[in-house]
Amino acid sequence: MAKWRICFCTSDLRFFEFFSRLAKRSRTFSPVSIVKPFPALLPDANRASEICELPYDVMSTPEAKQMAEGRPSSFLHVSRPEIDLPEGTATNDPSVYAKARENFDRLIAEGALRRDGQAHFYLYRQIMGEHTQLGLVAVASCAEYDANTIRKHEFTRPDKEDDRVAHLEVLDAQTGPVFLTYSADAELDALFERVASGEPDVDFTAPDGVRHTSWTIAAGEDTAFVESRFDGITNLYIADGHHRSAAASRVNQSRSGAGTSDLFLTVIFPHDQMQILAYNRAVKDLNGLSIDEFRTALGQAFEIEPSGQAKPTGKHEIGLYLDGAWSTLRPKPDTIDPDDAIKQLDVSILQDHALAPVLGIDDPRRSKRVAFVGGIRGTGELEKLVDGGEFACAFSMYPTSIEDLMTIANGGGIMPPKSTWFEPKLRDGMFSHQIV
Image 1 (tube, helix red, strand yellow):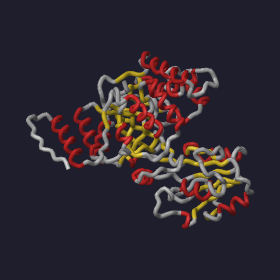
Image 2: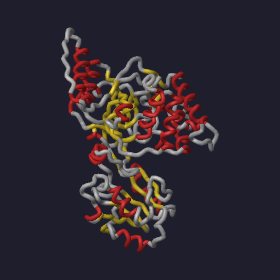
Image 3: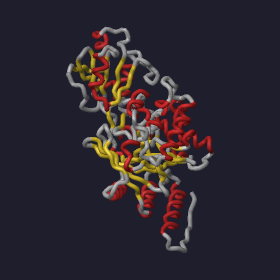
Image 4: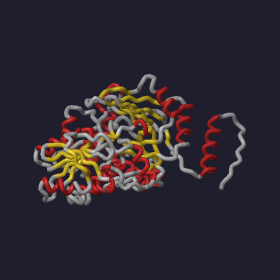
């Protein structure tokens, strides 16, 4: 094992910190989480509410077009640029990415977006109802993503990954941050709260009621402290943004690390501030079964209670909306594998004991017969889908815990598709990372 002997001939604290970090890495050979400050592209504070938008992938093209109507500074002109092209233009048409760059350059030229004069860490706080989360805006290492020091828990779809690669390549910038989490650290919490007690750079409440506030970590000693604390954090975890992080890695490989392509844009929240909502399911048909036959088949694996209760109250409860009424499904003991963290998830139990064997949905990732409905839409959306006749039944889920996510990611496991829905969503346009 490597040993270091270091002599200091200077009182400069920066040299001490540098060699201490280097020695620690060489001595232990254990992974650490590298996060770095960067000169972010930031929104004009007076226009931030007009610029910053929900992520590109939580809305359809018609919804994006309606949201951006009459709002030329909306970041949707960058993240969903097909709204400025003739109707019917494919979202992966080269003209779409060219329009994204055109609109991006226009926002910069008009001063809607400005580049910070030096590299900083930033803080980003979101308040949604009673929930508050305060995270660090930084760039993380593509090499750590590739080495799985930054843990993943989902597969990516090639088409969505290709789309993000093309968007990033044309813009020479990452405009949608990857949502990361880490095991909470009390000393980082204290520093972040202190900085966030000061005057913010940006502060606005979006139309959905979520408040978005940001600060710059300006003091050099605070920046050094943040880096040193993350040196002691073994892993980061992707909460949301698997396609964005995969795209950043691919672009970095194609550019051989040129510019700052070896880093990718993130907002990193402590795990105990994360809010996960349910990710519900609706199914088009009963696979040829009558309602009574369907209930009988479900009864092989579940206790069924006609509860009238739409939302599960705890783990291992699943709501079923069928024939205009809610029931509660409770998996029988032999359906829960005590030795497999993935199989213990309610989304896995539903898939393995209802969707696949009863409804014939073996591959929910590709099946057109199942729809995934984010918990932000509520159980009323499930009732609407079924009562409208487009779907035969719906399932409301209890949210997956962040602890389950981290456990599965640490074991190298992959969660079933659409296991988690994180809220609130990070706003595109709050921070961008230029990679040239």
